[in-house]
Amino acid sequence: MTRFQMENNGEQIKKFVFGKQNTTEPAEKLEIVIPELLLPGYSFYTWPSAPILAWFLWERRLSLINKRVLELGAGTALPGILAAKCGAHVTLSDCTTLPKTLQHIQRCCRLNGLAPGKDIEVIGLTWGLFLDQIFQLGPVDLILGSDIFYDPSVFEEILVTVSFLLEANPQAKFLFAYQERSADWCIETLLKKWNLSCNKPSQAMSSPGAATAFARGVQKLFIGNLPWTVSTKELQGYFSKFGHVQSSNVIYDKTTGLSRGYGFIVFSTRDGYANATNKPYHTLEGRLLDVQPAAS
DNA sequence: GTTGAGCGTT
Image 1: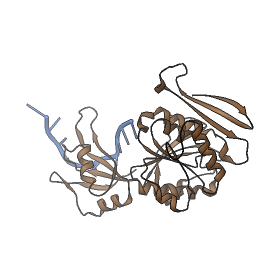
Image 2: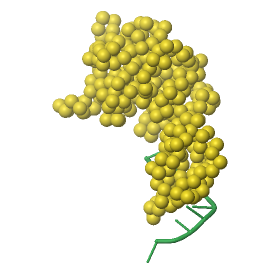
Image 3: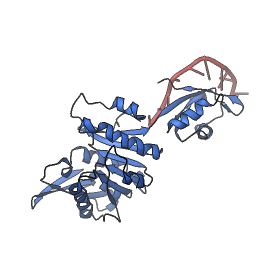
Image 4: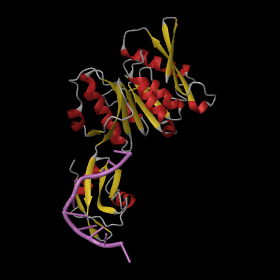
């Protein structure tokens, strides 16, 4: 990815180029133009996390096709615009009380050939509040946040909103990039409070930001005593009766390829986990399963 | 070609 910059009537235009520089193949290259305003306020500037998150998405662009994407605190919306350009159905959001920011997001869209209301949606969405707009949102597959953890006083409001959205969309993930501003900042306890879990930062990412994904309510079960013939798919099939299964795994011996007779189930929701653990016993192919909370 | 306590993988 490279970037170019030019001045224009107090406006600074940045051009971000993804993919191969000298290719004529349009699918291999994408240019996004972001106008930045010399105004006070954080939302008119493209912070370092944005190109990182955008690049992360670009690397996975084929998986974005027809995905429903919501960007929170979009600002100049580089990641969301990229997702839209790669075939996702994108809604960009920023604080309802910042009309200038929302206008600017629309301008960013238009400069990239995306008509707001037609090719892309721009809405006001305030973190931590449950106003009409959050209920009017359709289903979402991916929630994006670029550098939205910049002020600890609003961390909980962000996570309340994210938690609500992930509860409504159990298959969805929240992907964000952040800039480390203080070693003291921590969202660990808030994640627990709002039943969120976070996987390790992607190995692919490096400073200054890191992309990290959240999933709602990861509740992991260890499943023992599995019949040797039960596969990951069958395990998932059985436990899906209790709720949406986020992941299912049967562990196989590396050398023999045979099942080791145990596996793991992760539910997307607390309900699924509760339904499964409340059942006094589980059987699969006539065998009594050993179902217990996973150790780690 | 086996087995029946055990907490892995991307």
